Amino acid sequence: MRSLLTVDALDQLARGDSPVHRLEPRAKLLVMVLFLLCVVSFDPHAVSGLLPWLFFPVVLVTRAGIPARWVLRRLWVLAPFPLLVGLFNPLLDTQPMLLLDGLTIGGGWFSWLSILLRFLLAMSVLLVLVATTSLPELGRAAERLGTPRIFVTQILLMYRYLFVLTDEAERMARARDLRSFGGHGRGWSIYARLVGHLLLRAVGRAERIHQAMLCRGFKGTFPTTRASRLQAGDWTFLVGWSLVFVAVRFLNPVERLGAWIIGSGA
Image (cartoon, rainbow, N blue to C red; front, side, top):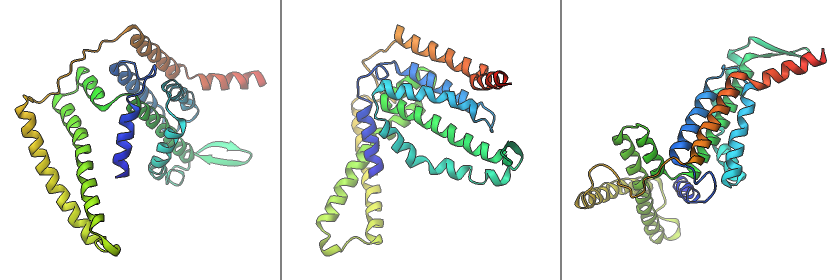
């Protein structure tokens, strides 16, 4: 239930008003995709090259007015996944890559840290995207960019029925609490029955809603009265950040700066 409330909180955040919220969804979606492609294109052991990319999500969070604590809390909840993915890298990849005061650091530690950085970068920009753009807007943007219509429709229907399912679950939980005197009616068998009844209610409710949609002329798409276009600010955001990403990816400023510092010290 708490995860469903998180979805509703994201929907509330997406209704905000900021320079990032006002950007056309297609511009945001294209920039995010290019950002992710650049991040995943680095070498598996890359660490220093990923550091400059932290600038982009920081700018987005600041400009969108999203509380940094909200983003960090979501990243913390998801952090166990990348930690477990690279848990055995230091044991499997022992090839020496750095000698620090007599201590040899293997490549597995760098690949593990690289996984964590990629996760931080990818999830932070995705959180900003869903916190500044509603799912229906993202679906329409993806469809206009060439995503199959049937796929977009399925995602939007799942999103809408998620809240219907939440309402049904809340009513059933309230009815169970009213009938649970002295702690009775809270065993695993009761929960199993509730899940079964919830499934049956959800199927029946979905059939009634589908019939109502067909009666109102639903033909597989969700019509919209707003025809959004890319404005000058959208093009500036799209082209400007795209050039920055390409430059940072191929020029590698951290490596150049490190080589310059070493050369100056020598």
